[in-house]
Image (cartoon, rainbow, N blue to C red; front, side):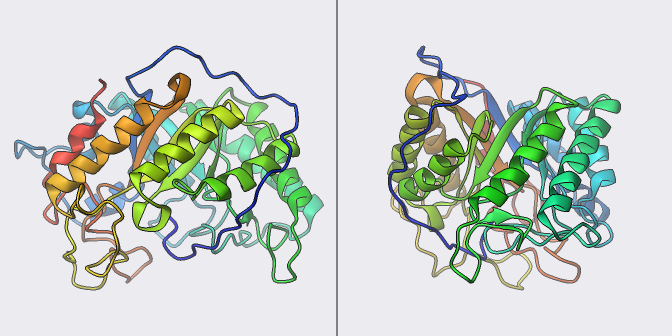
Amino acid sequence: MAGISRRGVLGGGLALAAGPILPVPRHARRALSVRGADLSFLPQLEEAGVKYRDLGGRVEPAERILAEQGANAMRLRVWVNPPAGYSDERRALGLARRAKRAGLKIVLDPHYSDFWADPGKQPIPAGWPVDLAGLTAKIRQYTRRLVRDFAAQGTPVDILQIGNEITNGILWPVGQLYPPDGTQRWEAFTQLLKAAIGGAREECDARIMLHIDKGGLMGDTRWFFDHIVAHDVPFDIIGQSYYPMWHGSIADLAANTNDAVERYRKPVLLAEIAYPWTFEDGDGRGNIVGPGTVLPDAARFPATPDGQAAFFHGVREVLAKAPGGGGLGFLAWEPEWVPGVGWEPGAEASNDNLTQFDFTGRALPSIRAYRRP
């Protein structure tokens, strides 16, 4: 999630280069191919004593509750060397085994960082090279090993996300798109992306997703992906974060999704979405989204359990109506992150009102959004 930095670069029309742009099927498709959630905090929450209950009050693991509602995918965050207990490769591998048992496919999200990476920060992991040549070799080798490790335990990656919300680059400052000197480093950035993609494709046939945080922002989306196409970066899926309090109305989402599908001939996956079911704070220590937050469609989607459910229904409608079946689906972001674990050791659960479980772990009506039709 990227709630810290909202820096964007509006831009217009690079001419789209001819390249490996796959056609989008022209037949209509109502069912969403991807219906899932990022549950990376789940092991820590369980260790903190959190129990999850379905809509009927039965205690079950959170991933099974979602799968029983129709979810078919789990997104897993991987940090290189995070604080103890947080989402390193070992944690992610364990959660991938649980996902497989629940019948969920794997969407892998390596941050290429020791801890949080988003549009406001993309720090190079400690111990990695700090020059372009060294980083190019390292990110290729690391990605190749990562996908190989998931396949080796019988949980192959279905969708590989190359970095997390890479709107402003990756592996700063080497791959930073907009450093303080005002330059644009598309060559270095795209070289790193190609290296990571190349490493993955040496080991697996996972679909490649490039993920930015511009769900309802058409100008920013065009600016980024026009450059990506112009630099011949091979990818399969346009990934977007969509948090309406930062990224615009549901109408903005529809306009941007439809434009991206038609402009790039690629499907769109909402790799992160969330919406408040309350403005209350479950742990009393502060939330990113509170009573002063402006929700662009508040009359249609109030910050209530039913309003949250209506929001997810609205998102599904947008995706189902995308041209040629180009609305691939959605991944709710940390819908299980109820009070109990902080975003860093000793910190608060800053999104505990954006979950799909209430503060006690009881499922909210919005989990019905995972249904197939």
